[in-house]
Amino acid sequence: MVTVAAPLPVPQHFKASNADQWGYRADQGKIFDLAKQWAKMHDIKPTAVDKVNTHLLLIDVQKDFCFPQGSLYVGGRSGTGAVEDNKRLCRFIYENLGTISNITVTVDTHFPYQIFFPSFWEDDQGNPAGPYTVITTDEVRSGKWSPTKAMAHWLCNGNYSWLRKQAEFYCDTLEKGGKYALYLWPFHCMIGDEGHSLVGVVHEARLFHAFARVSPDLAEVKGGNLLTENYSVLSPEVLMRHDGHAMAQRNTKFIQTLIDADNVIIAGQAASHCVKSTIQDLLTEIQAKDPTLAQKVYIIEDCMSAVAVPDGKGGFIADYTPEAEAALKKFADAGMHVVRSDQALDTWPGIKL
Image 1 (spheres, rainbow, N blue to C red):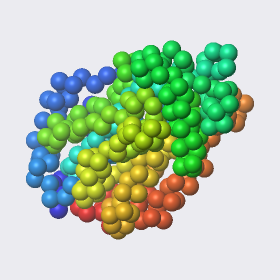
Image 2: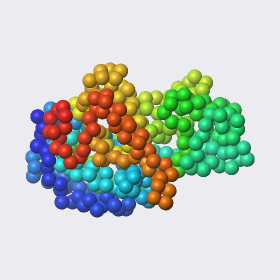
Image 3: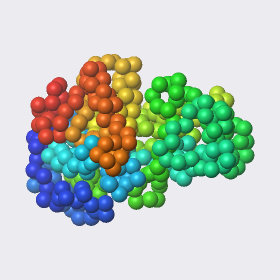
Image 4: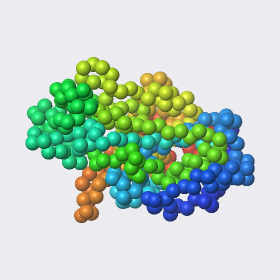
């Protein structure tokens, strides 16, 4: 039984055109007042009375990924991917306000020197690496690429030999895992930078939900470990150091939060990378516990896009759309549901309402 029948009308304060605006900022006090009025007008109850726990997970809906001005814009093949995704996503939140119990946003969070940034690496002449470079184990072993020497002073108590071994071990572990080679990204989602912030209209929608439904609508911060990538919010890519000590750990508390929910709905950026990795980790956990739990996961395919980097000539330098499509098929084959934001929730297969 749901608290409020969906869909609700979209509140007048929402302007889809604001999803195009890098500088759009929600008036948080005004949103609080409007949400309380909206809840009273539409008899929207607090999430505490929900009989069904529907959890919406929004992955990395941050400015650097969602605007052309961002350093890692996810435009998809259309070139407007993340921007249009966020317009649909906000409408989905507003229309299903009375059904969504909780919203969690993931927040990709980085620092100046991390293993996937150019700053971390230098060639045999001491020149820094460039973005979009692929670093292989053999190249680290041969000395073509090495960790930046001056980092050892503050990263590992001056033990540069340890750092070289760790870098080689990391690349080797990635390659043996078969998921990714180490790829150097442009600086993005740096803490303190505007690109780290949530997209204004999405932040506005989650605040409106939180205030209308008296829901905490929390955030899960990821990506701050200097020595490992963290595409998935549920686990870093590599958990161990070369010397056998733990380097990172799985996000067991949040994994359990999702496992315990009655419905898990997932959207965000990018379908080919952080979304894919998060869903894969969730599927792995589900299959270890009870494969039938996959049936409670819903992936909103029109609220996410794949990384596709234009070459300026009508093609793409890199296009990960096929990988994103293959991942969706894999997840659907495992029992998860691929849905669209404009489909009424009561038409989603097997959803508990």
